[in-house]
Every structure is written in structure tokens, then in C-alpha cells.
Image 1 (cartoon, rainbow, N blue to C red):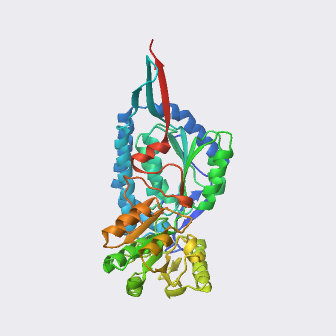
Image 2: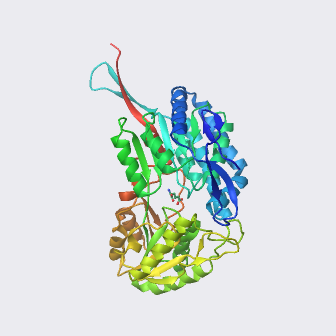
Image 3: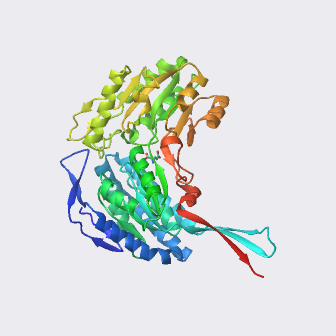
Length: 480
Ligand code: UN1
């Protein structure tokens, strides 16, 4: 598969290309993808600018029908897209398919939103004056997406951007460009006017930076690391145009397990959240905060569960944990494991590189016990299948530990106590709270986002997406 940029409704060859490698089997090159530069970004923004005025005023039925066709197109090709996603990102096929279906549902949801745009008409405090509050498109939106959900995250940025009448310049992740290419082809076939949607492949520090600093771009929706997010924030504010921006970044999510938890449920919630998708989710719990009475039983059951999770090729039917996405990410994960041992936590399972049947970036899922919430292991996001158990005296102690983090994306609790569940829901300092459910794996029709270093700006997804992808206008009218 050879990638091309998509600019102004045309497919454009790159000047240079780089291979998209399968992390399950590094002998396989999934495709060659262009390494774009400033020129491609300039062309894409120019195309978006020239299309955005008409698109902002386009008929809502027309917009609805286009987004609906994208949703249907994704669903019709779900198996093929999931296969490509699994091969380039390493997510086991069943999870990849679930993600592709979610992307289709997101487009379907926002197709409906095209028909639900609302405003308000109010009386004025001045006689004879009317006030109208409406939402207008922001203009040209730069979408910068990560590799870990290479179709769902682009979908939940691109679909609302288009639904609310914006033009888009999209930079997919370097490590997972093929899935984005398939999405772009479907969007291309859905009848969008040329220039409304544009795709430029390339490096974050070149293409991403060029989008962020381009004066023609009005807003940036970014998901990725905290460091890159900080840089984007600074650039958006420092530039002459003062762009709007929305950042989804890391997490160091706690999962509290209390003595009264249903142990089977708690173990499955922990395993599912922390280790599926090879732990490469910003919503994964990396800190299991467990009260004394259940601690040893929980750890023993977790280790049994981990032993049963088969690590392997993303396309193998018995694989539960696929490879890590890249060599650099694998090294980073193993570095955290190494330093975790050095700082005194006890590695009770995994954390080793594994030689698979095919050459790939495999490691066994890692579990530490005896971790302290001040350790690096408990403070920095790892973005891999590495979690630690922190012992808590009681519920109050567990809550305090859970909230003691610079992040605040998701937080979970496993308990059968209504009192503790209700108290945790109210007092957790996270944007999303899960009771007896994994901290990862969210619904697509409700707001997504966190607090602290996890997120910045308006929420994503559901109807709350309107906050970011529109700009409020207050219009006064004196009719005499
Ligand atoms: C999920 O857990 O369902 O990058 C979604 C991430 C998040 C998405 C998680 N933005 O992991």
C-alpha cells in the first residue's frame, strides 16, 4: 500500500517515503508513506481556507448525508480496515475491529448532530432589542492524532469538525498511517467538496509544527504526549492568531480495589483496563490501589490472570496482548521496569522482552507490588503493559492516593459498597470515573476528557464536542 497526501480533493505523491512496519512481524512492510513538509501543509491549509466558507454555510441535510456515507463506508470495510490497523499498530484483530466499528458509530452520531444544531433567542434588557445566540464553525481545524487509536481518535475529531461546518487539515500518527489512509479514501468517496478535508502525512515536529504555527489554522485538536501538548499550547497562544486548542494527553489512572469488592470482577476489570491494547491507552489504570484485607488475594489472582494472557502476533486468534508499537516504545517500557526494580518495587510478574514466533516488539505484561505512590513507577505515564500495586490502609487512604497525581483522566473503583462508590464518584479528581468497570474503554456519545496534566480545553465527543468545534456568536438586533 502506498500512501499519498490528500489535498484539495486530489491525491498527491510525496517527495520522500518511509516504511510502515508491522510491530508483530518486522519483516512485513505494511506500506510506504510520504514524509510531508511545510509545502504540503501550506497547500492543505490554502485548500481548506478556500473551501471553508461554503462548507460553513452548507445544507445540513447534505452534511448529514456525507457523514452518514462515511459511517456506512467504514462499516462496509470494517474487516479490511481492522486487518490493516492490527498489522500496523499491533492491536489484536478483535480489538482492532471493535475500534473500527466505534469509528463508524462516531460518524453516525455526528451525522445526526448536523440536524440538531440549535441556538437561543432571548429578550434583551433594552426595549425593542432582540438577542440571538448561535454557534458558528471555528473555521479551519488542525487535527493531530496519535497511533494508539488510529481510526477512533481521528474519527472523534474529524466527524464533529465536519458536522459543525469546519474544514480539516489532518496529520495522522507516523507509526499508524495506513488506517488513516483508508479513512481518507472513504471520506473522499463520500462526496465532500474538495478542500473541506485534507490529509498530510509526516513527522510531528515538521508537519505537526507547521499546522500549529500556520496563521490560516483557527484551532488545533491534539491527542498525544504531555510534552508535545505543552509545546502546542505555547505555540497556539504565542502566534499572531491566538488559536483555540484542545489537548488530550497522558494519564496515570488509579483503580481502587476495596476489601468488599467482587474479586472476580475486580481482577477482570484490572486485567482488561491495564493490559489490553498492550496497555497503550491513556485511560489504562497503571496504579492498582488495594486495601489490606484483599491485597494478597487480588495480587495472586492477577498474576494467575496475567499468566493466562497470551502474548503474540496481532492476527493470531489466541493473542490477547499484541506487540508494543515500536522498538523505541519497547525500550521505554523496559526502562521503566528496570528503574521500578531499582527504586524498590517488587516485580512479581513479567516485564521481560519475549521472542515471538515472528520477529516483533514483544514483552510480557508486567506487574509490580510494594510500590509507593512517590516512585517514578507510580507517577509517570508508561504507555505500555506495566502496572503496579500500591497498598492502602482503608478507603480514605485509597482515595487520597488515587487523587495524588499530576494527571486526572480516569479513575476506577471496585467495591460493593454503595456508600464508597458514591463518595468516590463525587470526590475523585478525574474527568471520568468508573465504578466496577475498567478505566479504559469509553462510550462514544458522552464527553471524554480529564483534569490536571491529562487534558486541556473543551471536552471531546458527544454533544460536548460542539464547545470546541464551534464559536459562539451573540447577535443584537434593533428592529425599530
Ligand atoms: C478508551 O479507553 O476507550 O489515547 C479510549 C487514548 C485515549 C482514548 C482512550 N485518548 O488512549
